[in-house]
Image 1 (cartoon, protein in one colour):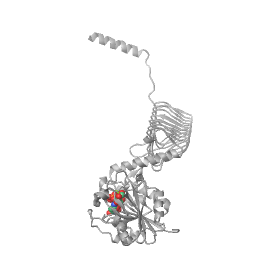
Image 2 (image 1 turned 45 degrees about the horizontal axis):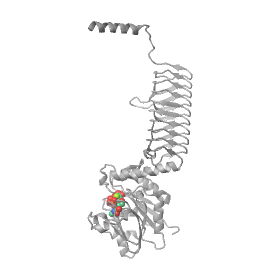
Image 3 (image 1 turned 180 degrees about the vertical axis):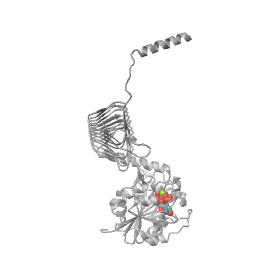
Image 4 (image 1 turned 90 degrees about the vertical axis):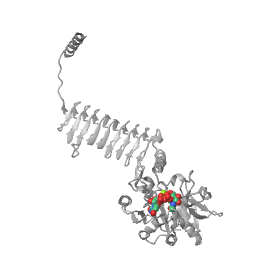
Length: 450
Ligand code: UD1
Ligand code: MG
């Protein structure tokens, strides 16, 4: 229907008892983003308005996570039908179509929601369109009862189902598109006379049919409609999301040498011809430009890596790291809030925190920027072309001038001028012949004892 208006409600007020967690269920993360964020992201391209998230009292973190979308508070959790009713005022009354989603079903694709709306807008205008699936194990999902003519008759909750109904392969994903005006009358008729004593949203199907309204079901792949009620299901959803993100990275031109060992965040961006070795983990906020090589066993978080840089193996890039074009960050090097300019190298065993490293500077093995004194954090600036000898401690705040040289083993506490050599270590003392005399003495003592 041209010009039809859709609104959406996402149910997220459930206690999530089966998670056994202090955190609201929908705040548990998948690929580094709370479940509820995934649902909102899938919904976004459809332009539904308003989008109202139903929460329980005190779920302030959920309200903050979904802002600027509205939240409606369901004072007590009396079931999914009761939850939709809690959103009535916030939804207003203008929508032709109302999409109902569950905050614990985060893998749903935009295209599936689009199909659901299209079915709702088809000529027979079903009052309720339910999204069904056929999981290999129907587990505790509600079952869709379809009549001989292929029309949806009812949804039976697993707890209420007969053995015959439990044998139905077509299950309820929970997601629906309903008539945005008729739904309120249907919801008002739902009763709580069932084993849980709850108002089941699923009952609206049978109620609509009783009023002579059409109801329909469409199907989508079960992997997309996994409902998360336990930690084990959370892990299954994470695995499914990772499969999707790996496929997407490869489709966009990255090589993953062993895809199943690479872990992405929902927002990881990889350029073309990026090569990612085995066992690499991307935390949130990582942006990698073209031609970068990320070798095995790296962990990146909130970092930007520019064209042609080489990272790892075994490197750790923490938030605020910007690694310039062609730079090298090697084995057991950790960076945090550090800008490493083009062509600079820190190849072994270093910590670079709150630091700026100029172009083509060379950071020797074991260099540490001492950025913290137990109270504050301080900056280290290393100029372009500087050479920091191995095992140096740079006590911030400190600046090493362009082209300067820091001798190995130095503890640098004052600024070093450009092109100077700074040596800050005990001076070498040499005692000629001392070792030979020492050995002779020890041998003599050994003989005297035997
Ligand atoms: C629900 C469906 C079931 C379906 C399954 C799919 C009902 C009665 N059952 O069961 O048919 O197969 O989802 O995953 O709808 N919620 C509230 N307020 C409440 C109760 C729940 O907001 O009072 C929210 C929850 O936060 C959750 C969603 O509604 O996001 C579903 O609730 P949940 O308890 O997980 O229902 P299921 O038992 O999974
Ligand atoms: Mg559920």
